[in-house]
Length: 182
Ligand SMILES: Cc1cc2nc3c(=O)[nH]c(=O)nc-3n(C[C@H](O)[C@H](O)[C@H](O)COP(=O)(O)O)c2cc1C
Image 1 (cartoon, rainbow, N blue to C red):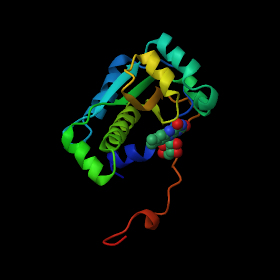
Image 2 (cartoon, rainbow, N blue to C red):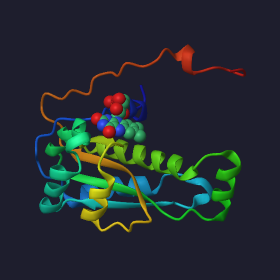
Image 3 (cartoon, protein in one colour):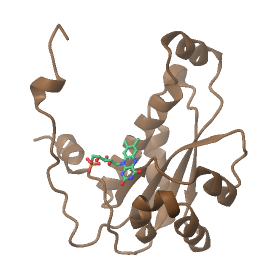
Image 4 (cartoon, helix red, strand yellow):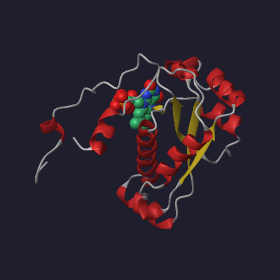
């Protein structure tokens, strides 16, 4: 197996962390990988807010993943968070998106997140991409303007020792891959 394929296959969502701090340089490398992701018309419609201040991570775990969002309460153990905010898109991808009935920014951000998660995996940092969180509270904590949207949050931390990078259950290849015809 190629090293790349090994990296891809061993990236799993991590939901149990040691509590160990992640050095800022490593968080920056992860975001650097995300910055290199492709985006429609190269608009790079994202902003990454890295949260490593313990006071802020504390406020996040206390309020952003509680109540109806408590299925993600495991994020309490994360050492850092990265919030991904969608930014202005530019006329070409916006028009293209309207015609194609899609928002290309979400596709762009999805790819950036995977770049980030793979880079983190290479540094032995566990990640979990989170789409379910109290956006209103998080916006307040991070001073995100009301007219912007936080699309995703990534929880990061060193995986607890009993967290294994096990093989994931995948759909059968024939179900999801076809040559020349749907
Ligand atoms: C857009 C998106 C949103 C997600 N939201 C959550 C979430 O809110 N909580 C959670 O525990 N996992 C979340 N996940 C992680 C998925 O559950 C996980 O990627 C999937 O089950 C496959 O497992 P794997 O990442 O270990 O391969 C999300 C993943 C994506 C791509």
